[in-house]
Every structure is written in structure tokens, then in C-alpha cells.
Image (cartoon, rainbow, N blue to C red):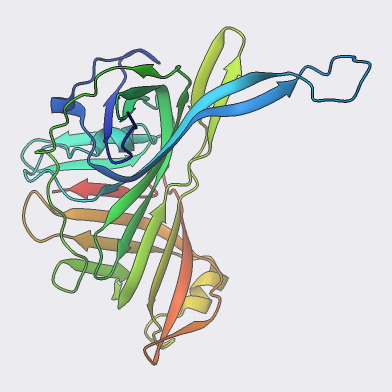
Length: 309
């Protein structure tokens, strides 16, 4: 009997002990994902390089074994202010703190120390891939007339696949997203409301599998956040992008998506620096610019925040 490609289930939960199954359930830990891909035996094939009296291939030994998994999740709130959204554990395993203010907000922002890890379980049919000790990175994408989403990539320690009945996922905690448009979305740079076509914040976390004697782990070693957006070009008198880039000034970037309490997402990058602009683009006869910025820390671990209110 074939394994049907559409029969996928993905779960994720923060680990309490590193690389130890924290007991995931379909009811509590299901991830409503799309575009899932898995590389389930990453590493190297180390040649044994044996002496032999003839031509021919050398036998190899698999080494540096780990797993990578990539997927997208839609960006919407939990529906209740002060209740963590279902995608919260993914941000935590991507090097973020989760701060909950009861009945008000849940905010994610980068941290340097005590970075958490996640345990993921992915089923293709009845084949279970358990991905332990996982840490990763994400890229937020907010494009006009589209659904806002985060593209995730996680690295985890290798566990041999096994045949286990798939969990039954429950997705009620995942709320329907709002389309990105004038009614639902606000975007400003340096307090200037720009006509935005597309926006992304790439966490760009370097992630390293460290597979050594007496310790095997996945380590998140830095934050290198980058902002990219495409917007209608504006006069220099409105915003002098060249001058800001030359002066190395930092300016605030704000993106607010959503209109109803419990489903408002606010992304703030208070000290972002323009990089050199690269020219104009023609879109429907209108001049647009594709621009890049670096999200810079000020006091530290404050280069950006994502608040669900």
C-alpha cells in the first residue's frame, strides 16, 4: 500500500529537558502548517579509503547525522488578548522570549541566553520522524493581498524513523488569518506611512549542529535580523533614504496587522538602519523601491518585537 503524500501530521512542543520527549499530543501541540519539507538524514558519507588492489567505490560510513524540516504557518492571533498563539513555541525555539501580560498581550523578542529547544514529531502516513533538541530560524512575510505567514526552518538531532500510528491533530487554536490590505494593515518607516507591496523580517539565526563526544546538540549562535520591503518611491523631501543610509541613522519600523482585539499583530523594529538603495522598479507604471534594512539592537535583545494583542 502506498504512503499518500497528503497524509501529514506535524506537532511541536518546547522541551523541558534537552532532547527529551515532553509528551506531545495532537490535541495540544498540532501545527497547522503548509509547504512542509523534511531532510530526514542530513550529514556526511565518510569514505573509509581502504587499500584495495583494483578500481572501484569505497564503502562509506554515515556521520554528522541530523534532521532539517521547513514549513510555513499563517500569522494570526489566538483570538484572545493575553493568550499565547499556537505558533508561540516556534518563536521560542527560534531564540525568542515569550512575555505574557494577562488579558492584554503576548510579546516575542530575541534573547541571547537560555535559548529553548523544541521537540517536533512529523508523520508521513504512519512513518514517524521524531526531531529532538530542535532550534531554528524564521522569516515573516507580509505581502499585499496575501496571507501573512512565517517560513520556518528547524535543525534537530537524528532519530531513526519508525512506524507509529499518527496523532490526530486538533487545529481549533489556530485562527483564520486576515488578508494584507489597506483595511487590515498599517506600515510606517520613520513615522512615514509608505505604500507597501511586500515586507519581510528574516530572523537569519545561524544554527549549528554540534555532534561531539559526550555532547550532541543543536546550537543557535547569533541573531542577524534583516528587513526587506518593496514600497512606492517617495520624494527625498518625504524621506531621504540616501541620506539616512549615508548617515547610518537608525529609524523605527512598524507594521500592524489586524483590527480586532485578540487578532492584532504588531511588529516593531525601533532602531533599524537603511542599507544602500539599489534603484527603482516599474510596477503598473508606478516607481517602486526594493529596500533593505538591518534591525539593530540598542540596549541589547531589543532589535525587534512581535506583540499579539
